[in-house]
Length: 480
Ligand SMILES: NC(=O)C1=CN([C@@H]2O[C@H](COP(=O)(O)OP(=O)(O)OC[C@H]3O[C@@H](n4cnc5c(N)ncnc54)[C@H](O)[C@@H]3O)[C@@H](O)[C@H]2O)[C@H](O)CC1
Ligand SMILES: [K+]
Image 1 (tube, rainbow, N blue to C red):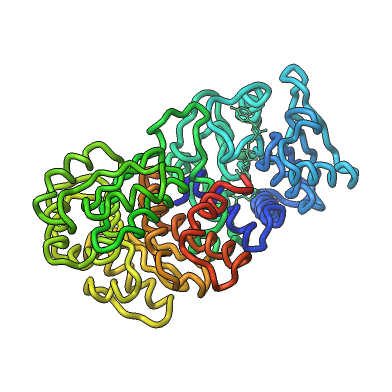
Image 2 (cartoon, protein in one colour):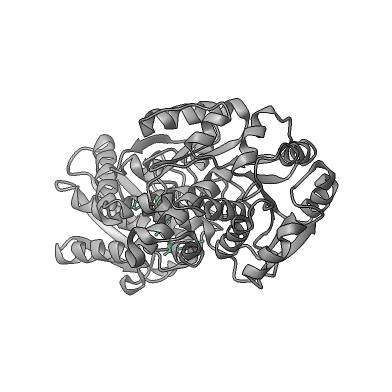
């Protein structure tokens, strides 16, 4: 099962992996033609009713694969208004190939010829809401026609995610859907075929540029809409919590607070005027601070615990007590990671260990990343947390879904890059409801920032260079 949002991301990932959408469209169209051949003999009359998006494009391709059939293609709208280049190119190919084609400019002009097979390619996953004209009238005409209806991807008018129809919808006999089942097809009374269109499995497993689509924002946004983060760290160190906080900002958080022992509070604040620093009495986090942390944590969307916190027993106890009483979103990094398996918590946890820290948590040690991915998935299920295990291949799993990130380079073994990653992760768990997606994109962005830094500095890169590049990695030029 795949939602339309996820489908769009996977599609864009395929493109990033060298399989452009136009190639997928060719496979989709081929699969639709096969479905037509399955229901009608050569010579049969086939009427293609196409919309102006890629759903229509699939059917223009199908027409080319139906030599021997009597095919006509009817575009709902003017060819100049076809919404994508690839659909337009396939329309032009029909034109130049002297196929029988027609542009239907409005619903009064709509009169479908008698047909043995009607291909419904008006709207696919790109659409929600009731069918507009002339598509609504066309749906009625298709439903009253006696021909067999083959729908492309989803019957037009049905929401691919919910199965609901907000108005008129096509009643299909057969549906050829692509790559994977759509949730909305469950409630559709038709034969459903899932066609493999050649999307590489890597487009689902690896985090790629297409995944960044899930970060798109509403134009009407207010301060605080995009997440507030509390970083709990520092004591023996001051740079680590500051780096995490900066990275959280660059990953899109609106406000970032740092709760840190007062011995380093001025140092942390001194790194940047963006940070709001809460000084905790003393020079190490301790159980006496837990009530303050819980109060601060109430007011933010996610808490990051660990950067520069050290491994003093009292600090680790404090983290354990905090987790025992908190039920929000928490990212855990560095020394406190080892407390996680022993703690009963209602918090939504994302843990960001490197492989040594994973072992200290009682987790698996596997050399090969594929074996590690399987073992991490099992361990994530055991401890009931999302894991982001850092390495040349970063593994993200919640025990059910597993993603792998391949960005990054050997220059990132330098100190502080983990603090940056933890900060990005905290910001993204506030932006996305899905911790696996958030951690996967965080790993991607951190590695990509490292790759950009290496372009400028080679393996002399340092962690303070990463946060601004995280912004480029996440929000810079990208395909939508
Ligand atoms: N990987 C894949 O799954 C592939 C899928 N393909 C096909 O592409 C469509 C989705 O295409 P998209 O261009 O995103 O959208 P649609 O064609 O579904 O619709 C866009 C089209 O519809 C107009 N529109 C929007 N809302 C309405 C409305 N309520 N009433 C009428 N018209 C509306 C809008 O203006 C656009 O013109 C997917 O389903 C597959 O069939 C590709 O083949 C690549 C691989
Ligand atoms: K359709």
